[in-house]
Length: 350
Ligand code: TXA
Ligand code: MG
Image 1 (cartoon, rainbow, N blue to C red):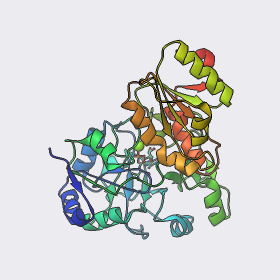
Image 2 (image 1 turned 60 degrees about the vertical axis):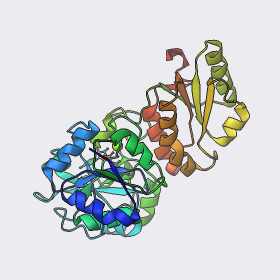
Image 3 (image 1 turned 90 degrees about the horizontal axis):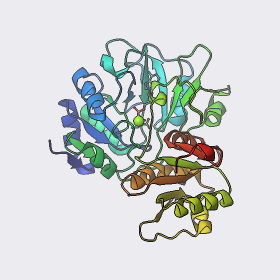
Image 4 (image 1 turned 90 degrees about the vertical axis):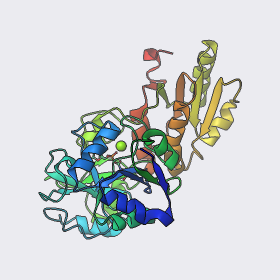
């Protein structure tokens, strides 16, 4: 199958292909999604198949309007202020599902459904051209870092899907916040994203819980997707939590053992380490300024994918403060990491 690239001028054609049951990848403000008509069971099954996604991991349905009453069993009270404040935007809300609206495979047997309205005009027009909501898991092969450019999608999906809408590089770079509105104990974050608990507390004037497994550890998650190995390049990733002298000590050890490595770090750290790319031995990929976690989240997956393509033995990635979007960045980076340094230095096979 030829995978066609679509742009602003050919959105109608892409929407028509979706309507006919084809798979079309689309840009959002977070990462690229893999689109299919959410009410078509055959197309949705194909999404799972093409991604190699476990069938117990439900999909997010992307809508192009704020009125979601037709898609859910009822609209919880807290939904309206959140939708008003954050849609279109990187917030996915979990609602009680209404039977018979979406294909059964969308919710993977759950009684709830995840909805989000992405902040990407091209994709809102795509959904309108298609005429109905579309599913959109991240458009990567299962387990690989999510795509933040059309060429990342092409790399993973070439020949497997009908097309990709090219919207350039995504702005935020990590997936949306997932907030469950169906829990009897009150709203709970199942996956952290650019919209934080504090952002939502300000709107709702009530506390938002952060669910197990959506922090930086790997404890039992409620969003089924959070339990799988994620975002991982082929090499082990070492999460660098220490000081500059910890960096220097590990670099010296790797050099001494003849190991090759890539460094994914802030501009400041890269400058201080004074590593230079030499004979393929050392490579660096900048996450931007240390005090700008949005820059780091924007660059994270592109950096992991970059080193995935390089012939290096290890990836050393810099830990950031868990604040604002830094929380989502650290959640994804921790999940991608094999060891933490220096804490797990004794366990490392380097
Ligand atoms: O930013 C995003 O959300 C991107 C873009 C493309 O919109 N999409 C995305 O989809 O990240 P995906 O499939 O890679 O992640 C969906 C997450 C998974 O962790 C899944 O388990 C969870 O949302 N999820 C979906 N439906 C759910 C439900 N009914 N209950 C609990 N978790 C759900
Ligand atoms: Mg994903």
